[in-house]
Image (cartoon, rainbow, N blue to C red):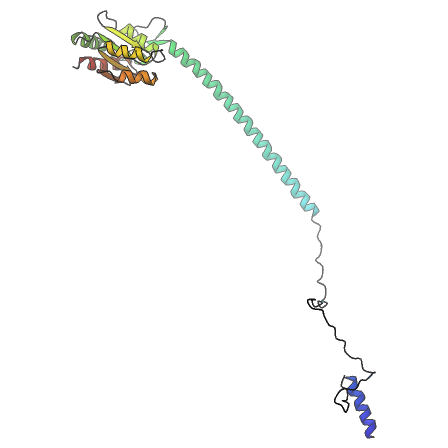
Length: 258
């Protein structure tokens, strides 16, 4: 009975992997028990990943119609933007053409204004410049001021102080012609130099040498070297006002000084 129980006990133990030790102290091999296999890896070889359950695939949604609609909307907006930009470009081009036309029109008006004198009934015109009769307040000769009184003060100052030759340089040819027509006196000589005239430096030096006084009248249009010569004159007045009376009043003051 003891052997039968030992046998059953050994059978049960072998079924769970326990073996009886041999007298030498090592487990006796049992051909009926499957020995666990040991897998050796080479140096540097990675451990094989344990098998895991695959993640469930995400459900697929068809977005092709939505994408097509968005693309069509983008194309529509781009076309509208291009049309708006084209329209603005055309408006800008038309505006530029209008500006050019207006500038050309005003340039023509300015050219006509430079050739025509707006004079009142009390003021003279100038040879070569047709006149248009206007009210005294719109007259470009006297500008509503008593021109004859200004001319008389200037001429008297020249005669009393012995300034019989006065150089007046600057302003336009029309303004110089109007001054010459207004301030005529055989006893006083006016040396007139309009802007744009081909005056040389040597000629300017001669004007300063022989003139009793120099008046620069809106003379910014003169050549710089010529203007510098006139500014070296010992008796000098600079007038920025374009009106003839204002220039005559300033000239009367400078010729009256010692």
